Amino acid sequence: MNANTNSASPSGPPGSDSDSLPDPVNWDAHYLAGDTPWDEGYAAPALTEFLVHHPIRGEVLVPGSGPGHDVRALAIHGAKVTGLDLSPTAIELARSYPKAGGEQYELGNLFQLSDTWNARFDWIVEHTCFCAIPTPARSQYVRALADLLKPGGRYFAIFYINPKAPTGPPHGTTREEISGLFDPDLELLEEWVPTPAFEGREGRELCQVRQLRRSGLF
Ligand SMILES: C[S@@+](CC[C@H](N)C(=O)[O-])C[C@H]1O[C@@H](n2cnc3c(N)ncnc32)[C@H](O)[C@@H]1O
Image 1 (tube, rainbow, N blue to C red):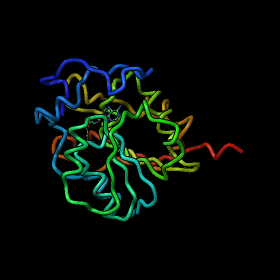
Image 2 (spheres, rainbow, N blue to C red):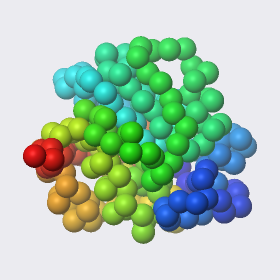
Image 3 (tube, helix red, strand yellow):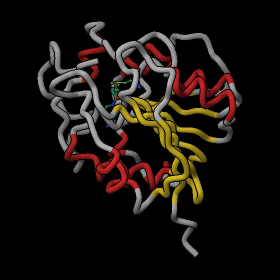
């Protein structure tokens, strides 16, 4: 996937009065044009494999959920899943699929959510959202996720470490960068290089399970 191809005019996310960093990619224009090379038509293989042995239940957030394949894979297993995306067209597309379980889709920018979203989720499941946001926004991304998790909440991530695309998005990363960004707020519990992967992503991903360090206000 390379969202820079045929990139539309720069546009910030809906709600221009925010203090979030501008995103040069107009995600909705990509969905409107059907230019979505990241959409493989089914859930991330590493997530599907993880769910076989590790049930994810409770309130789950999938940020940057796009067409919602990962959302529905989680919902089939009994989670109450919210797919969040800033593209109205992606949300409409996701809602057009038959219901898999207790999933819902909400239009919104991860960096501009109201306080009512705070501490709402038992799990956040990440796949191709971290690599999609501008790299200067990465610290802000981690803070946003930490605010959204319940005390002790967990984070399952499929990081796209080493994408083929010469320029992002997808923006690559390193294990060291991930540790520096996430370790202060989210303790690493497990990590592995997933074997099942979309074609072309084999050996380029890193899965991690992390847990929020904050245990509550008191
Ligand atoms: C590369 S696409 C991946 C979509 C989906 N995860 C998949 O694999 O098919 C990145 C998605 O993140 C969404 N996105 C980017 N920045 C976002 C933000 N700040 N808040 C919410 N969604 C965002 C885009 O609209 C897009 O749907």
